[in-house]
Amino acid sequence: MADSMDAAPALEFEGAGAVYGDGTVAVSGLDMSIARGEPVAIIGPSGCGKSTTLLMAAGLLRPSEGDVRVAGSPVAGVRRETALILQGLGLMPWKTVRANVELGLRFRHEPADTRRERAAEALFQVGLSGFADRYPGELSGGMRQRVAIARSLALDCDLLLMDEPLSALDAILREQVQDLLLGLQRRRGYAQVIVTHSIEEAAFLGRRVLVMAPGPGRVVAEVGNPGSGDRSFRGSEAFYAACARVRRALEGAVGRA
Image 1 (spheres, rainbow, N blue to C red):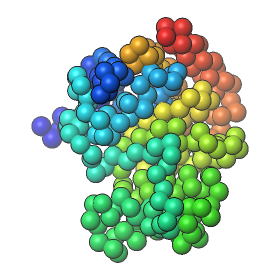
Image 2: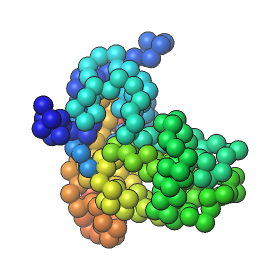
Image 3: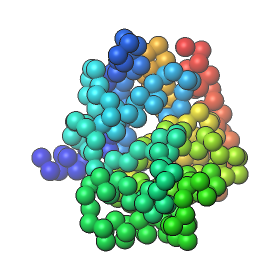
Image 4: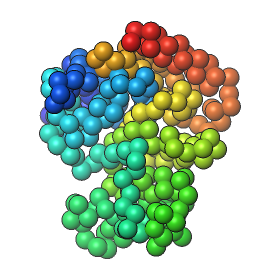
């Protein structure tokens, strides 16, 4: 049993669906498998169920049909080793950067010295060691983004879920944070799923790009992208070719909608 669990995907959807209280079928018949340590991007038009998919993976939304499994076990609620970064980041403006990074560890009832040690290491990894006593309102947008990433790193996650976390950043800052995410994922080896509306971002961060379409939400195409995983990829011909493949798949999804 242990061997089979070790070989299980980091995240798996099998015929999964989600229906909201007003009867809206957000996702239905969703099949998806993400390997351990694999970076995957999900892209699709608005209303195709991308955010709903992440909420089910994080244990914040119970599927109405099918199964959602993480590391081989059914998702029955919030999981300690799963980290989620939402578009709004969820930073507490009245708490310092250090306190924001420690927040998840407080919910786990970790000792104070453990919280402080993990927060310091996470802030170091995102380049914010000197800002631990600042408040979010004193930071730039890119720095606040890194605080949210540090909070996830402090949890020592094996699955990082991100819902359009970089959409509010300008082009240069967005690329800088993309580079940071790329480097952290490679060093720490967790599975990473990013939902995005950006074709370029999907092609840069996703070793595979999954394209979703609405009516109801489901995966309609998969674009292999083995060249991703290095900063130099962004300026290569292979990157532009990957963007073109993702664009064609996305146009097909919009056409289906």
